[in-house]
Length: 327
Image 1 (cartoon, rainbow, N blue to C red):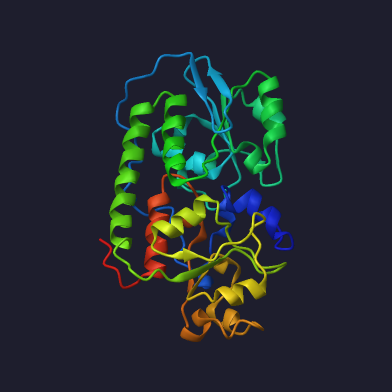
Image 2 (cartoon, rainbow, N blue to C red; image 1 turned 135 degrees about the horizontal axis):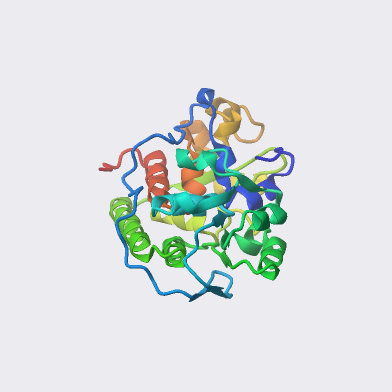
């Protein structure tokens, strides 16, 4: 992840889809993702009926993308896409990826890095012989690279979900694009079922607590805006998100006025602790601080809209509503 001195750029480039750099060190106390843990989601896809190529698909930016033949060399420019490709059984075809410090799944660690939060190596992608690139597009400041790659004759599909439903639709779209539509449908249906079960439990909560999700506080106070997939995640988890503005920013005055009842530390991977929050000037009057309801969370699974999005929702519910009986 980039230096903490530019948190907004960090957010745009990393939190939204490249949230990998929020992996917590062992000493942080964050329940970090274990790359070797057994997941409830399928990691090897069942046999599928291959779609007919060439395909014309409409991506998340409304662009019609023609894919001439089933891709054999795929480049993933978002960590969520990398996870999706491996989850549906296309991992062996991934020849390049965006940097992901989390390296999830573990097998993806061997894939060459062709992009980082601050840029895409178009030449390296072209040299790889890629016949499909899946990008975050303008939403991840990859628009210029998308145009260059398309000009080079490489099909580029933009996947940039703005809601939970769009994240599931994105999994289906990626599956169709790589000839594994059935496997992607099974995965998306599995995730949707898990989300339905979790939201039905969280929906039993009558008094929704006011929650502040801390992204960064080193150059201001940063938290997700109301119009975002992350705000939707909090709603599904049975909480009222104290939202930031369109720039993910909120002033201390507004935060104090909103009076969070729970504070979740998405930046705990950097060593931010309950004790350090309690010691901040101007924070002592908040209900969450007075009640000690300050919880370190695994930012990766919460903010990455890929195959583990249901796990992210579960993590939110567990942090906000530890009293709920999750199965």
